[in-house]
Image (cartoon, rainbow, N blue to C red; front, side):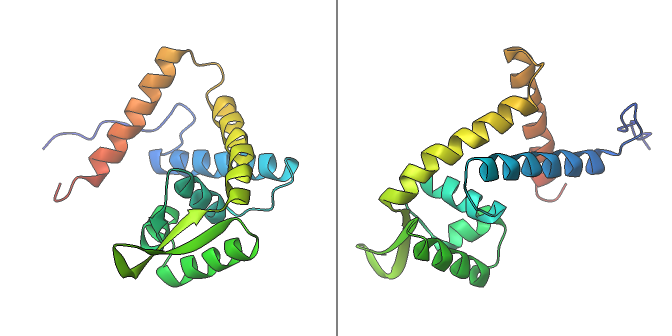
Length: 152
């Protein structure tokens, strides 16, 4: 049997704890950025708007991206519709499917909140040169992929 390789940092943080701390710190910084820019958005709302900025999608896809159950996503979409940020449209190819997309107001807000995200990412990677940033992303993707492989 192979001896497990150490994965604790010099500070003694476990890998899982470190991932959680980074995620929480990034979201806290993002919440500050959004608040300072005058946007009252939850993390799930931000993720939903980000996903919609990439194109029209279904509520099911949005729920998966924001890690919400379908009922919670429906309520979140309703709140974003009330705020004028998103719209529902029937899918022309399948009447049973409803597509969600950013409204004109949602697109305008997305451009601003995307800049908030850029500032947070830039702060998170400050002190790293381009090669280190690329390597860091590759390593994180490898960890994600290693944990996502079925049956291993």
